Image (cartoon, rainbow, N blue to C red; front, side):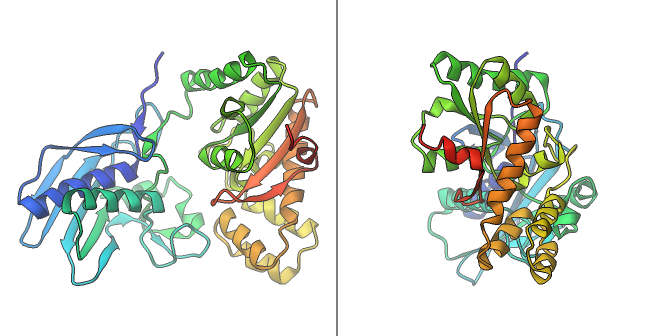
Length: 359
């Protein structure tokens, strides 16, 4: 059965912003707008709300998650834009969009929880319609946002009063369907058919882009596994792969140390506690442990560790991920682990990874 893709809250906001830009420029708003996502997928988005005021315009787009069981499916994302005396674009927090209250996230404390890629998409949408503009205030609102946020990890991350506007590709791919799991197997089959004995399994774009940036390897050897780590390891063993690298961000891969080989946030809690245990084991100072405990995200921990120049601890984390994966497959293949930060820099490698870096 073919699975249906959806689009992110970031795409909703960018589409609504584009419609509002037409309203601000022309005084009239179309029924639909065209949007090209960062993954180069073209969308035609219906504008379910259109309003033009004296010095502002606003639109809304309804989120469609496709076949993914996303809690934000069907929510409405409103964007109001208003000309401003200030230079550039300012993002304002509307009702139902969270406020960042802790450091360590991609967005600074005190800012609305609109992630970098959606911000860039909104800017591009405005520029496409308005061209060069002196100043625009952008307010994003999700009427059901506060209610939906209670079903997310936002509270634990220090994001209060609403959801985050997210998405790195603009597209929602079904993550929890058997049909999607079957589609992942195509990557394994293509690599095997090409004669490769070694593969790299990555949760998503961070691991994939990071690995290709740092290593000269066939694109067919780097295979996305989404959250289905155990499933893909099992299938890789069935196909006889001898060397398997697991690469990605420690926020995702450290969950394997806990024994979570299905890593979706609906089933697997954040990895902060796992990392703190390892930091303590590696004799990191109590003062630094306290600072790490105060970080709401794993990426925040990475930045703190960088500041204190003890990055070697991530090699030990990579070792632990490697060991957990070896146990899972009963050592039926060579396993190595490589960890990247959000900027796709290498921050940790396991002992076995060092043995086959030069494939």
